[in-house]
Image 1 (cartoon, helix red, strand yellow):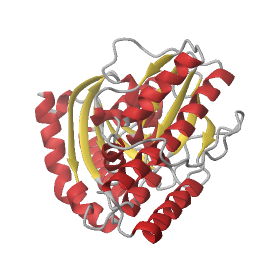
Image 2 (tube, helix red, strand yellow):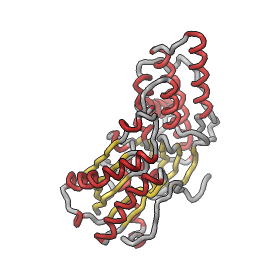
Image 3 (tube, one colour):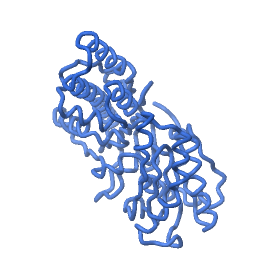
Image 4 (cartoon, rainbow, N blue to C red):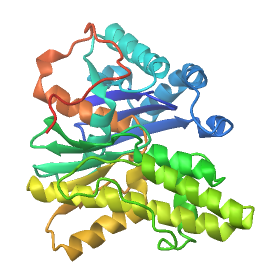
Length: 348
């Protein structure tokens, strides 16, 4: 089954063609990072305007890259939510139009489900259930249990900021570039992660929730203290602070992921979302697995394009949704974007 997928939940205009949920025939992303760097974050109206300007060209490029005509597409997938409503509407309008004109199924996809299924893309072997997934970016920070395909159970989430959001805010405090994740990571490579002892919130072994607001405050206090004692921030302080902050975030993320994997007897653990591209997070999970002698399969996508927002992940998730209930999707479905769309039926 070949699916043309569209993703416009925030500030990336993306389209991809995915076959049978795993084979990416094309993936195109038009980034708006340069535009939003001026404001240090995404302005919804600006993002939506850029989607309008780019969506047609991005879709055409994805089809050209797949070397297919629209008649070869079996269904259309699109991000339904969560996200910025003004951005979601642009991608949704394009997908609905294509589905209705060509009378092919329209498959709405939850954005986080897309991130979770990014680890199915271009893999040699299918994942084994049960799986515990850490899906983490600027907009979401969750631990998810999958007992089977499309069976999502929320077992932990952030009580305040997502890790990616904390990265952006700390980067701004340190005078680093936007987006904060890559900027913090680059600075951390030159810093001492043990230079500043930052807190780890909610570190009880049976607590799978996250909190990063206190860590953010701790960073602010260290910066203010340095200003008072030394004046302007030095490159050494910035690098050490970035490394120590990153170590604290990754320690919390990795510890809770592994604790959850043990409790729920997972066969695999997955990293998904923009922060999953962080090299230190990946290495820390591996180090802790060795120390604890945990025989788990660790998956994350080596193609960093599939960690951040992209349409291939939406096409991958859409395939498994469709296979579960092919009669549930049509070209005339009355379904609309939902900025606060909930993926989970229950919490534990």
